Image (cartoon, rainbow, N blue to C red):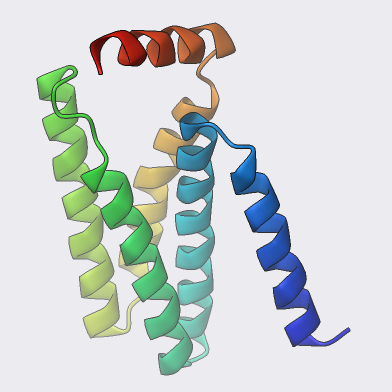
Length: 139
C-alpha cells in the first residue's frame, strides 16, 4: 500500500473520530497527537533528518499552543495559571530541542505531558457530564 493511500486513510479516520467527539475527547486526541509528534521529532533528531524534525516540532508546537490557549482561566485561577505556565515551559523546551538538535528536552516535554493526558483520560464520565452541564448554565 502506498504512503499516499495510508495518509488518506488516516485523515479520513481522524475526520470520522472528530465528527463524533465531545470537547473532552478532542482534548485527549490533541494530547495524544502532541506526544506522537514529539516521538517522531525525536526519531528525526536521532537520524539527523532536519526537515522531518522541523515538521514534527512545528506540529507539536501548534497542538500545545492550542491546548494552552484553550485553558479556561476563569475556573480555578491558580490551577489554570500553573497549567498555562507549564505549557509555556513545554514550548520553550521544544524550542531548545529545535535549536540544539537535542532530543533530551523532548523527553522532558513528553514526561510532563503524559501525566496530564493520563489524568484527563481518567476523568469519570459523570464528572465530564457535570462539567459540560455547568458550562452550559454559566457559559
